[in-house]
Image (cartoon, rainbow, N blue to C red; front, side, top):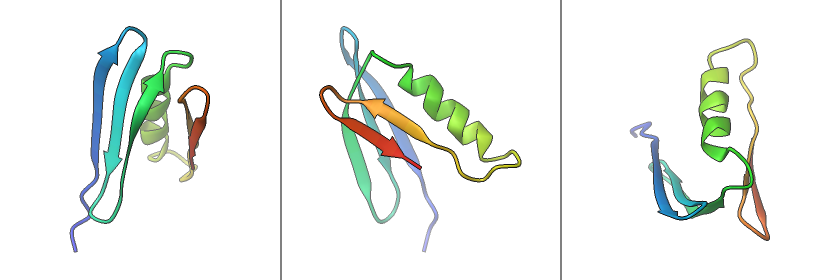
Length: 70
């Protein structure tokens, strides 16, 4: 079993990006809004995994929904 995590971020319009996160067992993708700095939040959370806290939280505004990762 491989522990392969893949992340994609593609600008898809004015104020929108398509985000894709997948591993060997699951995949999530959606259009993310400009209302938050979602890419910076993801990068901060990934960097935070190497700190004293091994749990990080990220939320994406999908308008009108929200995706939360913990």
